[in-house]
Image 1: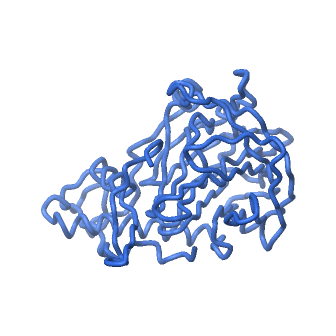
Image 2: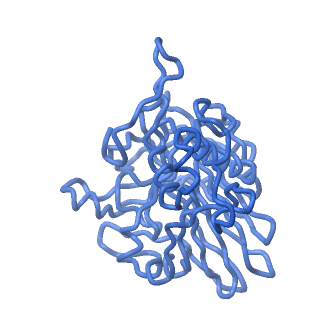
Amino acid sequence: MAQTGGHRQSHPLSLLPGRRGDPWRGDSGVRTRVSTLIDFGRDVCGDLGQAETREWLVTNGLGGYASGTVAGLLTRRYHGLLVAALKPPVGRTLLVAKLDETAEHGGSSYPLFTNRWRDGSISVHGYRHLERFRLEDTVPVWTYALADDLLEKRVWMEPEANTTYVRFELTRGPSPVALSIKALVNYRDHHGNTRGNSWKMNVTVEDRGLCVVAYDGAVPFHLRSDRGRWETAHDWHWGFDLAEERARGLEDHEDHLHIGTIQGTVEEGKPLTIALSTDPKASVDGAKALERRTHHQRALLGAFAKAQPALAKHVSAWVEQTIFAADQFIVDRPSPKDPNGQSVIAGYHWFG
């Protein structure tokens, strides 16, 4: 699906006015920084019992989404980095389950991911390197401590496209950090469950990444990056434990396929961006993609300001966050009578 300019046409593009002297906004009255209303430190991030019960969600306005836990642990069948709406706003299909990242720096290895397996074992404890988790407006941000250096990861979706971006940035550190990132994929209805068995997907190398075709007739999807070197693989990882599914009385383990690994480096001022998409032409320019996400969020606040000008002058961070949350439930639903029609989706995760 082709990308758009990053906002829905029904939303005005004016910025939200604010109070002069408000630390949330500059003297011009224009919003000057993002909301970090949700912000967890080591007390939550370093405690698996807490970090695996805090969940995040980003959406694309088509019915597609990405979601997971602060710890990076899968606990629901609905967790994944790319759940694409192949027949918007329905046909929601898990394509990319997760990325398992390992950082190499200063002669030491830092696994940043965490998996719990069917037998209850945990391998590895990547959450122990997680210094901070925060939500910048709608964008989840993880900050990992690599000795004295800090590495940040951001995840967001392209508005109006089945595209998820994952961006790694070294925010403190004098020397480059090497990253090895394993991509684990699937291809199933987001209500479903997969057993790998003898299922073999077609994985091919393309410009800047990999193309995956799960079976004949399946929608191809792409994993591409702005930098780094991709290597193909085909290795089923069996028995991811899904604790929340067990709590619901449902099947509580699943398999995902490792289809490739990207090797790359990040250094200050040179981040690494990975695009996960059904669009073979999805941009891998992380900076511009994040600008489009920010533009979309500002448009939402502009719509609120136009509808409620008096309230907008005194809006607080939690009200802004509520506006962003409400937008996640508004999806495009075109019809012959209204090609620009929209609808309110029942919800995430286990609703249709």
